[in-house]
Image 1: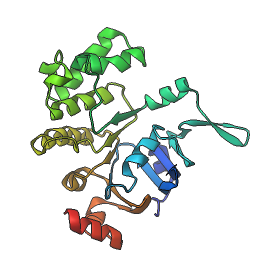
Image 2: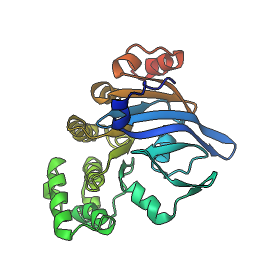
Image 3: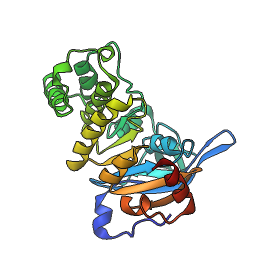
Length: 264
């Protein structure tokens, strides 16, 4: 894959850079040297067939998966490791947690705490990790709930919400940490079809406001409308990358053409 040409302006705008990412599960090499660069305010959508390594790549970007090769940098800082002489060693838990706090994550299955209210779910990390005063964290949480259209559900529990509502709470929870970027791992795949639209509308609104986002998705319409860049993966390889109108409507690679012919 050919990366975007570097220039001094672009270099200052780079939020996330992954270089040569490799990941193996036993004998199966899931990621085979993947590169990607995400600029501030960019929406990067990662598409591809199931089993192509998309979610593993996403989880590798904030060290939820420990990589076997390559490096990930957030604002120029190595993620998950520090250099010791000629070797790289894994960061201690506290330092790794501090790095992860700068990268929001929205999972397929919401991952809300069932014993906490919506409001408690959102303020938990800002208070516990960022040490924000409870009053400040609560005010921020209520503003975020209003933004995702759920201010009336602050005192509800996750079991009392629809899947779409739970995912919107999960998005608000990620935003409460004021992250440098947010990673979305197929955020609509666990939803009933009629609930997909409400989550995508929130994501579109965030994109319009300039949130830096990396989105693993099967929603081709969303990728076409919102993405600045689309990355097509297959077999653990970044096959093709470019503007959505190029990758989705006029792909160069035969594998990309074959995939899109089946899903569009």
